[in-house]
Image 1 (cartoon, rainbow, N blue to C red):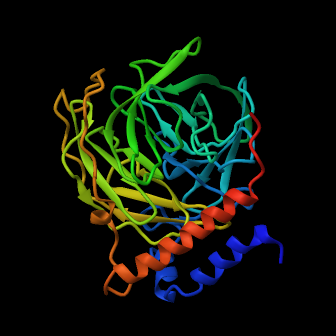
Image 2 (image 1 turned 90 degrees about the vertical axis):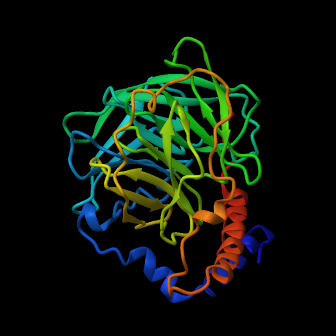
Length: 344
């Protein structure tokens, strides 16, 4: 056996030890509708790493692959799980590691080429923006490209969120001990560098999304999810735990267009998108959707285990979580080893 295959084999062995109920939980939400989740059937979508609910096409969700795919964004119909449009972006460079997607208040989709599996070595990353097409069909669309840097240096990130009222863009970095929530400038500039400044601490985040009214921010990791009241341009308090499903390589989350449900997605062929109902956000006060410039300190979940889901059989979470954490660690290590080195 070749040495670089050892982590992958070990991961498979550990995953096989997980209770069958855990695997069933991710698919137990039913099929065929947005209310009960859906399965992405397009064989081209093997690493779905972001989700965004369309506002003009009911039941349609935008997604994209992780790295090594190209400048593509897919529209998936939740009623069938089939792709109804693949958009090819032009006017941009070669994507390195697309990790997030979000819909702005102006009807434009923001795509975050913000991943950095080399441990935060890129001195800049990119955001692409294009108008959500009114007609769903395969098309080639010109996108704007924005250069992004962080005020406190390069880092890996997988979560891109656009506030649905102010249009301000936020990024959550992915770090086990020092993850941060970063705020972009009031308006992105295509002609210069856009500096994102840290406004709060977050745990290990793989994706995030604002509620449609802008009153709450949802963040997820591999083993947890929480929603936070959004006040004065910051997440407030410790938030509320959400029963996130068990999904292995859990990399995406978005609200449904009506804000009543969170849709959780994962990487993998024929991946399942699981629907979890949530309490609707209270209508925000004028200051709750604020775009306060600053670099003040925000408050997000300091303890990701507080939002971890219960074990599928209703028993103790700890043992299953330890096994899943080990499996995920090995799987991610294998993925980094097997992934083609990104182009500079």
